[in-house]
Amino acid sequence: MATVEFLGADQQPLELPQTEPVQHALDAASKWATDNDLEVKFALEGDQRLYIHLGGIRLNNWVDLKLVTDGDTHAILEQLDYARFEYRRSASGYGKFDR
Image (cartoon, rainbow, N blue to C red; front, top):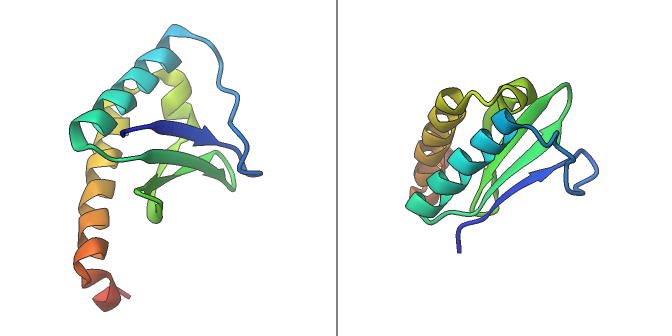
């Protein structure tokens, strides 16, 4: 089942503002996860960076927390597409050749 979670640095659910732009970002990420049948987690690490986890694998792709709070769905979906490509490369075994 496709799910979307936002986690804080302590791996607890991240409290996001309850605003319309944030809801648009959540809806877009949920639709993307459903369309791609993937579990998506955004984990806060460091300074305002939400690293993308697909299917339980932490990837090097990240989204700035400001993009979520501003509701920039285009940029979020773009990063999710890049992450999907990296996820598929890792699943295919090509990750071992990346340095």
